[in-house]
Image (tube, rainbow, N blue to C red; front, side):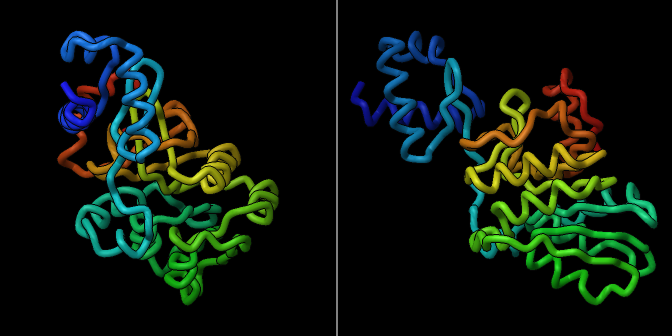
Length: 249
């Protein structure tokens, strides 16, 4: 089998199972473990998968640019956001990270609910800035244009001064073993600190984000208090992620 054929076989297997193992592939393809490790390294460098110990997992495949995700899966995002709102109580401090699903959370906050909201997301600021009951604080910093958020030392320093009741974290990949991951190192660093500072942590993830992983680790699933997904995915996750400790909505 030619290298190109092996690569396509590997990607096809990932599309079916989300994770592949070098030992199993070696038997299936009749090639050495070292050959497959080199294949996985090359595919990882091309951004087609994420190499992990003993094999590889699929990337989410969703667009990284905010504008490319804004008008996709709107009904599912609204469904997930509606599950989150009842968790909030007036008087609480909420930290809302960037992301198109988190934007739906901001849109569904009731007009009469008194909250303090911190965010590093330009679109979320635009949604909440005219809500008279919300004390809104924008985490200024270096602009990460593709995600329409701020990152960098200024955001990092500001986060160290707050202790939010709730964090609504934006992620593009959620995996039962690899945890929460992101494609950008600097953004992942900000998200890690958000997780550390918050008392309760919420992650919203549709089917395109599940069982996928990117290059930079944010946190393990054990650090998540509530994983929110679409109704159609709940039963599947309960069956296949039984050992995880979060509460699924």
